[in-house]
Every structure is written in C-alpha cells, then in structure tokens.
Image (cartoon, rainbow, N blue to C red; front, side, top):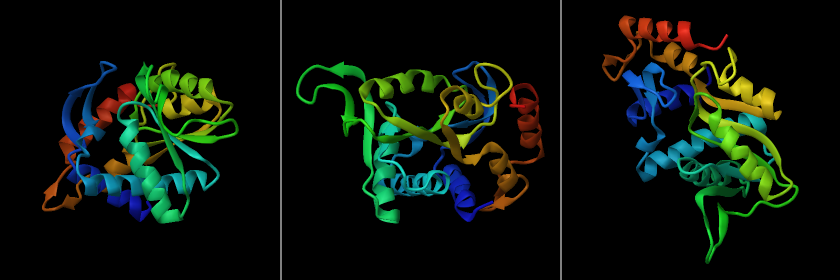
Length: 225
C-alpha cells in the first residue's frame, strides 16, 4: 500500500471522519463503520485533504483535465481544496466548479458556482464517498447540460466496496459501466481494515477482533462480488 494511503487512513481516523460502531445509512443498511467528510472543519485539515485528493487524482488520471466538479454541498469544499492543492503540488491551474441546489436568478445567476463549464472541458467529478452510486444519477445530467464536456472520471475518498443500486457490483463499478468513465478512491475499506486491524495506533487498537467480525458480517450481506 502506498505511504500516502496509510497516512490518509490515519488522517481520517484522527479527524473523526471515519467512525466505527453501529450506524444506519441513508440506504437503510446498518453498517459497523461510517464516514462523514463534514467533520473536516479546520484549515489544516482541508489543506491536507486537498493534497490527498490531488495525489490520488494525479495517480489515476494524470494531468489531462481542466475542471474539478464537486456536487453540492460536500463536494464544494472538496473541489476548492483540491484545486488549491493541485496547483501547489503539480503546478497546474485547475478550475473548480460546483452546482447549487437551487438555481439563482440574480447577480451571479444560474445553477453553477465557480468556473463556468465550456465546450471541450475535461472534467473530473469529486465526492466524499459513494455507497450506492445514486448521486451520479443526479450530478452527471447537470454537468452534461451545461456544455459539451467530457467527464474523465470520478474520485472519492473511501470506496465502501459494497453493492450498488443494480446488483452485486460495487457502486464504482456500476458507475464505470453506466457512464463509461473511470471511478477511483483514495483508499478502499479493505485497505482501511488491512492497515488498522490489530495494529496499535496511538496506543490503542482501532479495529479489534470483534469489530473485524462485524465488518466481515456486513460484507457477507452487502459486499460487492
């Protein structure tokens, strides 16, 4: 596993973003782990988060893109922080763009925040986590309606590695099949478990035998094949 992935797993844990216990997800599934990117609240956290996203984007997609599109609402700070980090790490001026939940009819009117989309733009979508893939059903039409753009791919922070909307494939696999663009994560839940299971971190075991058993049971029911 790459060093930046190990650091990112620890960063999620330290930031209170990745939690373990018992959680009811939006999908109704009861999960032993939960990720909430809304807990990244400080300047240093957002700076680091943008750098992890930038490294993963560079690894999977290189530099051949123009715009980072972050769907409202959590995707807005993700796209801004990552655009800043990309300029710092790789010297590329990447534009950021996000959508509004409601269309604005005065001043900076329209549905978009940040850069407007232009014909020929190559766009990378950026989100926190995708459990079922439903968010792309809402976001892709918005992006495609703005200009004749190419969506290069999607980047998320954590691949939960569970079934998507339509069967036994993961949400990221379904997105690849349905839309024809790449879909990647900074880390997978398998990598999280591998790094934290029975490994002391700051004096404690985060994933012990009992929690590992609960995670395994969850994936027996909801894990992608």
